[in-house]
Image (tube, rainbow, N blue to C red; front, side, top):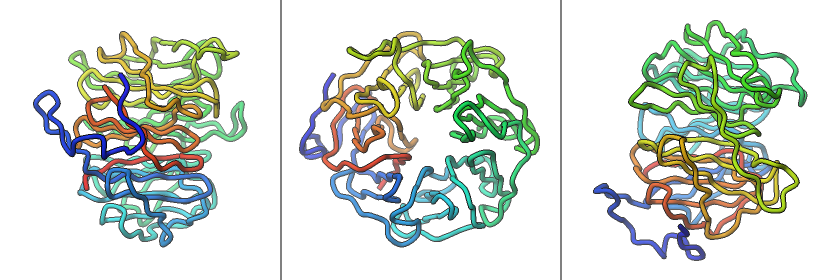
Length: 349
């Protein structure tokens, strides 16, 4: 199903009723880039502002996250600098915490404790227990080297039902778990038959009637586990027409609403074409979504917000952005394009 393109939000009504829920397209989008820092849009993606005060406007912003604790509380990283925070929905940014001399790949919040924050680094994990003012580098089960050189911690997720359980996905070193709030860590070992099944790009926790399911996205597709990662069932996505590879490369995964799961895919990395794979039955069956403009590279990042039901932002690695306001059933491409996108957030205006 194809959405409108060109004039973006102008070709949609300002609100629509979907499944009895009022879905509004009045929201703020944040974009973190490689080489051009941080950008914010305050009118649903129609106009953009380059953030010059705060994170380096010519630097790398690989992680951008929304705190679950108060509205308008956004956090971002700047490579070889550190962490920045905005308490006014991205309007102004202040430096917080210590200096970091490496690349910063992910931010994870404890939904039960606003003082506990995790940073995924290259390699490793750092933890704050005082709201980001100080961080300690943790001793983890992440290896110092991997098949591509130095591992990168791509996601850190605190279990909302049991905050002592913390998960970290690593590129290329699989999945790691802490059962004591991050103090000690255990590797889950080899996740699939190939060493690059441990090249974990995306990680999400999906609530089902049967319990929590772990979802991981790797170059080989989507892995699903119902036993806390002891085993994974794998789904490989079909290759793109004309590709020299026999599968689709997978990057990000989200499971934001009921049984909906969305995976970003492409022909390779960075790729020449991308798409979204969407399941509406929890990952049992899949449909490759038609987008209004064929992506120029692998689709890479996804963002939703619990106070914006039905709205999702999806981006390609080479700067294109697509928005759905109807639970990923139809899409529109935003006019604005960027260079390499490394992070995206969505918040209410």
